Length: 286
Image 1 (cartoon, rainbow, N blue to C red):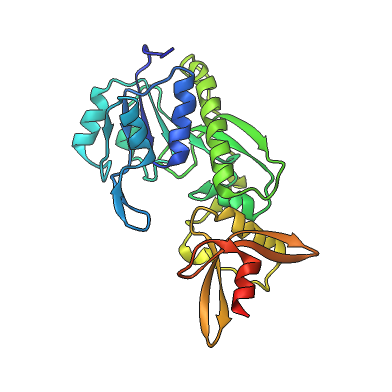
Image 2 (spheres, rainbow, N blue to C red):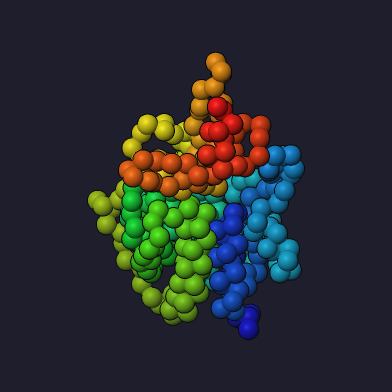
């Protein structure tokens, strides 16, 4: 049953955001407007494709706008005309300027997949896996102008048993978890729940991941290599280079295991070929 008496705007882009929307919709919260990133080329054929959130909005008959920048008086005007009580941000991918943060009377709530102030920034999930942080979780915070710096409205821990998980799986899990937590606290927030400032002295920061981060050295620490393969399963993907007949073959590692203390790839994609078993790849070299 929809909470039609609440007007709010959602900002988000990837699958994490669309799962958050699923959880909110299940609890009866449907946004009045969705703001997402412009369509962009994706996949091998680089076909211009809308974001997952844009597709979600279309499927649920909700108006969607795709501004290339939020520093635009016209966008601010559109957002003011919604007369929203609050905004929600989940993995939108752009900094939201103060002029927009000031629009809704109940502020802008953000779903962040870490236990803030730990793992601020753009790669909290991958960073949790890489640093063996088995106690992950989600934070709902009130956005301010600084990155992941605003006061905490709610926070909940999530323990992941099968460690290290794949980044894609942990992302989906924390999106469901965070969306459900947000749906739970919206009535309390609108009813006057106070946000608590973060302990900024304890803040840790994550960096933007690059394609190069996926490269692994097979002779490196086995546990470190396994965490890289799992953390980067969707992007940038883990890869190494294997020397063969005087040339270097790029080998994408889809999954791996540790056997008798050694890092052993299990599923791979050799350059220019299809996915195969690692042992079959090795046999093919000889």
